[in-house]
Length: 382
Image (cartoon, rainbow, N blue to C red; front, side, top):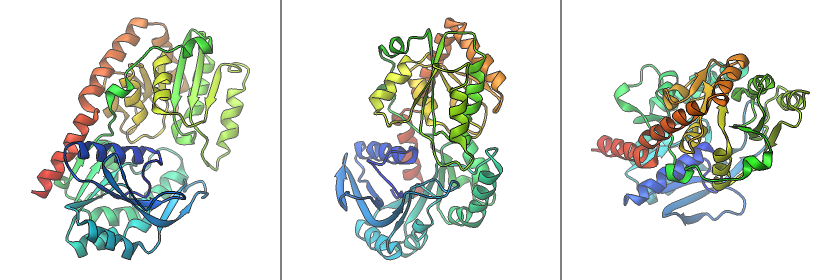
């Protein structure tokens, strides 16, 4: 496995690489991870049965708005990466990011070592976010991403949507497949909590997202302004460099007369246990994204049996199917009506929560997702 960062760094891709590696180790496979080395980390270590190799790197933690940090550049990777791969001598290489040009020498390594190269698309080609992200994200793929993808041997994506909009049109379809994001469902099972009592409202609403324009949080805040219910909204997330004065916009909405005292922002990092407690306390989970290749927070909410309201964009309909209420993006009125529908109907909430739990168990548990990836590895290599 090759990815610029790895545990204890926690992000969507890093969590995926960690959990997939854990699954493969549990099935008797030997897994090595190559990544960049952050300050204070060992060069070589074994974590959860995974052999971790960290390369000395230049890591940039502050970058312009359109280039979300951090960015890792392993020093002399053309040589050091080749030397390390030659020593490990894997059956194949699996890359998990197309956005780090510093890791593109893998294309040379795979040729020199006669290895197969898999790629997973965790971030689809951007659509309908804003013109800057759409243009520059698309331009990156046109200039670099497509160059990499055409030279890999097999491409996974986290949804069919991501495959359809991202993979070059002339890439062989038989060398592509969907490998959804996964979770260990039992770890996210709903449990008793007193959190809602501490909030002191009849209904607790929750969202969990990076606080950037893509996530559509302003539409959620506009939507809940008009709710005729005793509610409290928790926004779990941190502001990122957006370049559009987004933080001021959100904070202004939060402090408006209609929402004052009804919204709590939780920017701190929470453990998995703490996140399960949040989901368990919530009556409704809302993800108002403008663009979403998959949305792992959705399957976390589904596993915790928290009914979901979301937008019907990107890969979200693939994840939710008919187990949730979906509305068009950028439509605060439709969002408000969907939330109201849940809050006024406890039977509907229970029904959708049950359906969602059954769906996540069947499709998104690592026992299912890991097996699908493992089978592709074996079939392809044979």
